Image (cartoon, rainbow, N blue to C red; front, side):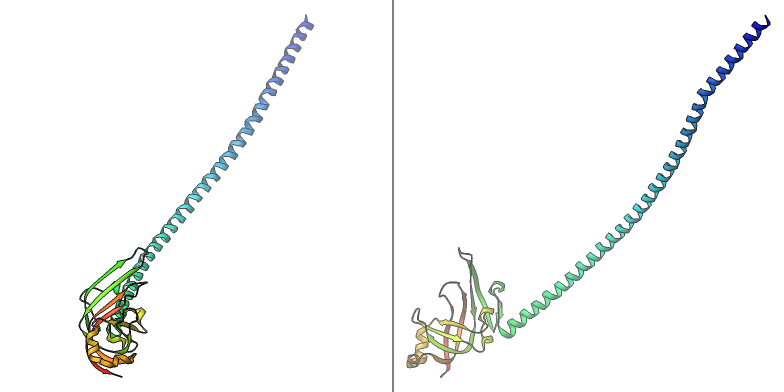
Length: 242
């Protein structure tokens, strides 16, 4: 009986030991796993903190550069506006100088531009009485500018081979007659009243070319590309001839 009791107690103790060992085997991995999870969580928290710090740093840098570039853009825009104003001032000054130069050329050299001339303008003492322009089918443009008033000019008289009339070639004292920039070195005009010229010169016309000094009026500037149409003026009186 005592043996049976001892045997039962041994079995009970043995079972308890086995049970404790089983529980320990189960609990120990759980504790180990829990320890690993806590370590991972701690690491994740650290990484999260670092990421937040990096994000805040990036936000700060973004704000800094945004303000910097905004300020630079504002500065450049302000500078650009100032430059525009400066350019506008210089352009206005240049236009004024250009206008002054143009007026000086008109006043002293009698050079004019037909496309910029208007009725009533005075050039070389003559007044623009009429003007018109016309564009041809090939794109070229012709100009006709009529002047009133008398002018004295010296030139060389030739016979006009095209119509048998007379043409005066002027190479000196061009400032006495309105002329374009293309005529800076010389110009010519046809005499519209041949009969009056013949009366004044008589048989002198048989010895052309002839240097003369004469008074003319109603000067007409005519620019017609690819034609024989030239300038013209009306003879008034003869001053001298050589």
